Length: 479
Image 1: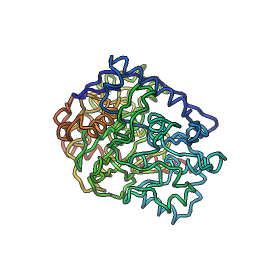
Image 2: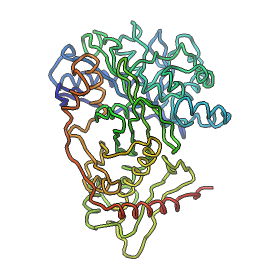
Image 3: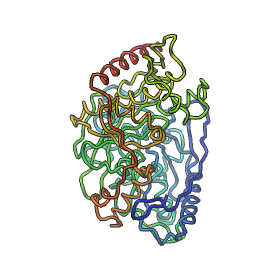
Image 4: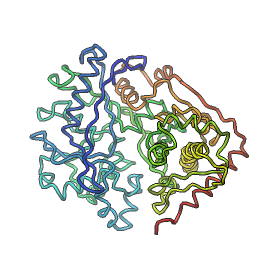
C-alpha cells in the first residue's frame, strides 16, 4: 500500500499465497513464494499509483509476528518451509520444560509458554533440518526475510529485526531489549544466526536498485502487525488502546515506558520504539472467536447467507430475550485460558428465535472484548475512557453500539481503516522526516464514526453478571 502525506491510500496491490498443511497441527508457508508475491505487489502498487520507486520517501514493513524462516546466507535459499504462527508441532518440547524454566521464560519475555511464538520453531529447525546448524544459516521472522531480500540478499542484504517482532520470539529480554543468553541456551538457538534488534523506526538500509523498486529507497520501519495497528490508530500515549476485530480479536493497551506484568492472563509485549527514544510497552489480549462466530451462524447453522445480514437480523429484536452464546469452540483464551471449555448457548426458552441468537452472537463479541479490557485495566491501573477499533466487524454499527453499551465507554472508528499498513507507513515516514512528529500525525487522524454508551451502569452490570454465569457453564466440559 502506498500512502501520501495526508495518509490517503494512493496505490495498492495484493496477492494471496498458499497455506501448506503437511500433517495435522503443521502449518507452513513457502518463504520464496512470499518474497515473489512481495515483489509483485510492490510493482503493482507503484503502477496503480502511477509513480516510480524513486518517488517513494521510505518503505515500512509490517508482518504477522511469529512465522519463522531459516535460510542460507550464501545462496539466499530457504532451508525449509516457513513455520507459521498457527503451527503446534513444538507443543511437546514446550510441555517438557521444567516449571522453573517456564517461570524464567515468562518473566523475561512477558509471554506465555506456547508453540505460537518463534523460539520453539527455531529449536525445531535446529533439531530437524541439518543445514540449520550451518554457520551460513540465518533465522528470522518474515520482516527479517523481506528486509534481507529487499536490501540485496546474497549481494549484501542486512539481517535485522525490530523490538516488536523480537519481543514475540521467547528469546528477547523485555528489560534489555536484546537477545537473552539464558533464553538462547534454553532454546538452543545461536546468537550469530539471529538478526540484530533495532528500533521500529529508523533507516535500516536502502533497497537494492535492481530490485522491485528500481531505485535505492530507504527501508525505515518494521512493526509487527498488531503494534503497527496501534501506531496507525495513533495510540502513542499511556492508556490509549485499540482493538482489531478479525476472525478473532486482538486488543492492545499502551502502558507507556513501564513494563506491566499481567496477573490476569494477558501478554506483556513491546508496543513500539522510535529511534533512540525509550520503548513503549503494551498489554495484549486475544479472543479466539469473534468474526468466526458470525461465520458459524452462516456456514454451520445456515441462519444467515452473508455475514452482513447479521446486523439486520439482530436488529429485528430489541434484546436477546435472555439468551447468551459463549463461542468457546476450542476453549477460552484471555483472560480465562481454559482449554477444557466448549461452546454453549444458555437461557433458551420457547420464545427464542434465530434473531435472538444472532444478537447473542454480537453480544458475545462485545462481552469477550470487555473481559480482556477489564483484565487490562486491572493489570495496569489505567482507566479506559475510549477504545479505537478497526477490522471487519466494525462495519456492523449495531455491534459497535453494543460494544459501547456493554463497556460504558466511547468506541471510535477511524476514517482510514487499513491501520496496520498505515502504521508501518507512519513509522517509516517519521524516520525520514516525511512527517515531522507524532503531533503532526495526530492532526491528520480522522474519525469516521463514534458510538457512545446509552446504557445505565445498572443495566451494564446486570448483563455482565449473566455473561459470567454463561461462561461458567462452558467450563470443565472436556476431561
